Length: 256
Image 1 (cartoon, rainbow, N blue to C red):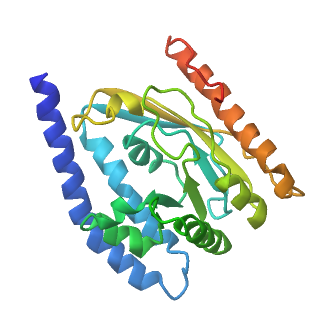
Image 2 (cartoon, one colour):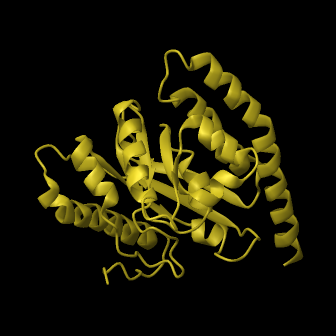
């Protein structure tokens, strides 16, 4: 228990130092690339290195990315993943393509982190503001038009027990309207890395499995529910396979 506490303090320290060091680099890159990079792709890639550095310097974690990573990182996708813990964000930073995160407004209030999120064009979502969801989808469409992918957790909140929750349809409406594919990613192991409501980290080998994209060509608003179900089913199947590979029993992936 003491070892876990000490390593957790070290890991949070690494996160803080990584943010402090990377923030001015993000600012310099954003200023230098602004004339030819309206989507802040390059500045965003620098910001995501926070997650890479934190994993490399933490003895508690091993992160891997597997599956069908897109050949062209500048082809825009609506990326969707299941949501196990805060560490999902750090794990998904390892996927070798820039995505703009739709994040709750609380993250934008953090010193340095919030500044970087604004500089790189991440998307603010205020759950207490009914109009915020509409603005967030409009901003997401703007990022896609600038040839940068958007990352959304369609469950809306972290799973408390690891079960796959229902998917909200906003991400899938966005993909159809923008005419871009859905890129599903199955995430496993991050719940062990940081349990909800506990500040201490745990030992974990976390994996992000990038699944084949789901095209939206020819789809209309009437196909939203079917597209949502296809993406959720793809992630559910992958999670079962990943749990089986680890010798774990299947979890409840049946939509309620």
